[in-house]
Image (cartoon, rainbow, N blue to C red):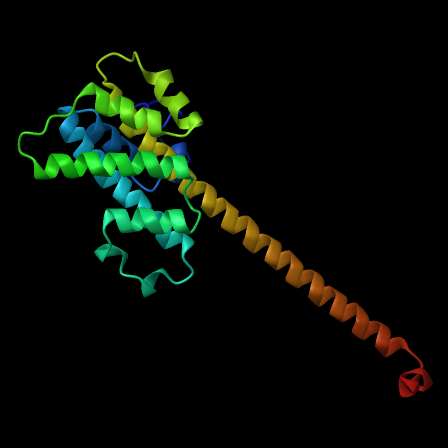
Length: 203
């Protein structure tokens, strides 16, 4: 067991750790993304991305049950997240490229994943995501595709977490506003009750 808080590094985690904020098991995530050839990692990474997109929509929509998310395609989920402003344009382009790559793998028995595919994904990423990918290049026994998939999945889920915190903060502001309105109403009622009868009758 380790106290390493880096979600892109393999970690056993512990109760109360950063792992609890993610919508998936980080240990399973590392096992799936770090084994096999790059084409297998793309397939596994795509599953995690689809999961995060689904959870993002479930948590962002007011009435998620009105939409059959389980029947929506990956592209449709990504488009909806983009339309709702839940994911920035750069991340959408990066994830869309991974989806296209996964489709190429799934429909062509002879398709091979090359290093330039990873560079394409990296180059489409927003600057801060690209920086995270480049920081990890050079890690032993890991391809650029592995880094791209890891960073894409982790940053997409952290974006989901950010929206959860945003909604919590918004709800807290609404609670405070309602409390202030009720307090103002109470003060006005108390003030009215203390007014002389003649004053109240004139009003």
